[in-house]
Every structure is written in C-alpha cells, then in structure tokens.
Length: 305
Ligand SMILES: [Zn+2]
Image 1 (spheres, protein in one colour):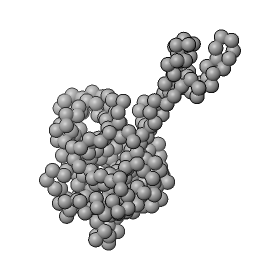
Image 2 (cartoon, rainbow, N blue to C red):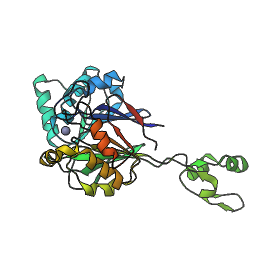
Image 3 (tube, rainbow, N blue to C red):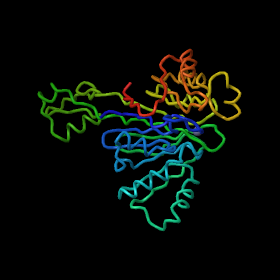
C-alpha cells in the first residue's frame, strides 16, 4: 500500500541534458497519477517501465510549454498501444482546444476517450477522489492561470484488535462496522467502544505539488503538516529580482513556505538552466529549513512520513 513519488523532470523553461522538464508521477498500488507533462515525459516513463495502461489521470498545472509539451506525444503513444481506459485530464480549459487541434489532421479517433475536467483558479477546490486519494487544486500566482495540486491519502480502514476477534468472533458485517469506526454490542447488550477494540494501521500521508509561482505566503494555510512538499525554486537569492520579475520563487522562499507550513520534508525543483549544479539552491534552502532535497529525475521517494 505504499505511496510513491517519482520525479521525471525538474528543469525549467530551457532544457538541460538529463534534467528534463516538469513532470512527476505518483504510484499507489495499481494506479498511476501524472502531474505535469513536460517534453520527454513519455521517454522517462518508458525508462522506468511505468505502464501507460495504468495511467488514467493526468494533472496539468498551467499551459507553459515546459509543463505540457510532452502530453501529445504521450497521448499518441497510448493510442498506438491501443489503450482502452478513459484518460481524465485536469487542466486549464484551453488545453482541450490544443489537444483537439493537434489531433485534427489525423482524422483518426483515439483508442480511448478523454474526459476533460477544466480547472478553476479562484480558490482551493476538491477536483478528484478515488479509493486512495482526494486531490485539491490550489491557486498560485504566475504569469498565466496556474494551480498546484494537493494529494491527500484517504484515512485507511481501522484494524480490529486480534484478541477481541478471538474472544468475540464477530460476524463479517460487524467486523466491517468496527473497521469503519462503529462500536460493538455483544449478545448481552454490552457495548464495546470502537477505540477499545480497534487501532489505526497507518496515518494518511500527503503530497503537495506547488508549481510555478511567485512567493505566495498565504498558501501555507493549506499546506500544514504535509508529508512531502514539492515547491518550485527556479532561482537563488542572487537572482531575487529575476524571481519577482518572472513570477517565480527562490529556494529560500520555498524553504520559508515549508517552514511556516510545518511540512515534514521539502523537495525543490524547476531549476533555472543557469544552475548546472543546483547545490547552491539546496544550501540556501537549508539555512531556513533543514529537511530539504532536490528533485532529481528518475529518483523514487516513498511518502510515508
Ligand atoms: Zn515552468
């Protein structure tokens, strides 16, 4: 039941060899969820042997090319592989026009349906839920409509205590009730409070993906105690003015968000191509928030802290 995150790309607008552009994939049991889809995303997915058949949900933060130019190639390969399952795409409404226009000259229907969910950018919205996650969009402040995404693991079912099971031998329905938080009443009418007969197997984890944005301190209210926060860190302190002008963040600002949101761990990425070596970005972040790592393509992280 592990909740894994793999970085596929961590560069910004100008490409750098081996850094690739923004894309990350979440893996939870049988399901995959893709966040952003910069150029080369499908190559990275193939590199890591992720199955295109298991990927049915794609979340795009905004329509700058470094976050979605890989999408048409990926959809095209899914079609060539005769994928059947519907692909849900969560993005700005204009992306649907771009997809339709790109497909038009082919005059061939894709092997799968696209279910397009247009995002709104005014407030935090619950945009998706399934058996594992609730996903929220969170508005950011960039040069065009942009949002981040917060993945919150659902609270897992409770485990029934073994000694209680042996002593009382409850029915299947009763066990299900206890797993869902109900008390147990035995044949003599004695009530056993749920807390005395069950326990939590694992606390739910969470992941937030804060894409391109100028430093936006009010997002910390929505990021409290997140297990892993990915925050863009395009620039170092030296380029503070460039960060302001281009509506990006410095690594110190990303660290300040992590600190004020009391997150467990921070991952920085979306590095400007001027930083062939991003250690300065890591060092500057560490002066503010110690638990920081760099987004490195092809590295997998287990989110259970
Ligand atoms: Zn970008």
